[in-house]
Image (cartoon, rainbow, N blue to C red; front, top):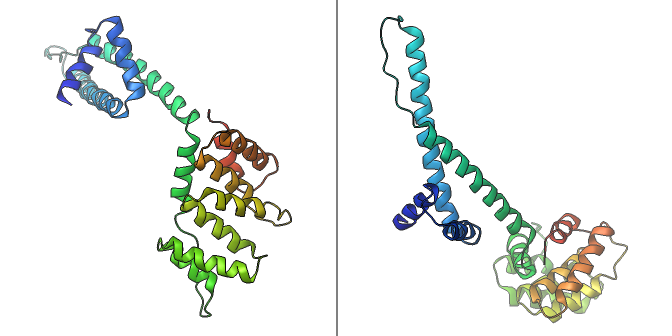
Length: 248
């Protein structure tokens, strides 16, 4: 951190060569930790600037309240240095903005899928009731991260009732979590046939599974499925539209 501080100060002081400046700016884009150090440096300079502005305001206040015959010593304000830091801060802001656009618009489909699963599929809602229900037992096991046990319950239910959409959907999600992508795809592709349902995330989950699997051709097929989700106003339309805006 200390060496970086000197390096950052040299950049703002204009002590780096043209190639050194380019390397510095590229490092901000590629190294998030370094970018945070630059942000800290700028915030410290901004705090110093605000302190000097406060001193200047105090000087004007005293000047206005004192008789003209009493001289008041004016605080030394390093205006030129402040302008230099403000200009450099504007440059860094542009670099950060470019980095933000790059990070938002370009992403690995596998990483997007992983983040979605971590955020949305780690647990599933359980209905509390007195009557014993195998589906709810399976969901409780799932939420306790006992994936194999929950899958066994779900598949037992499916054997008894092959038309149980919800449990098939749960089984597909468990297989996705277990990274058994072929089994997950088999469930989601089967569930896509249920077109009369009000809520059916199967097409989105089909795309999600392909993104997570990331085999040759999976990205292209996943994009086509996400386009269907977006075009046909299917479940998770907003997420599909957001992902389609990214470069992958």
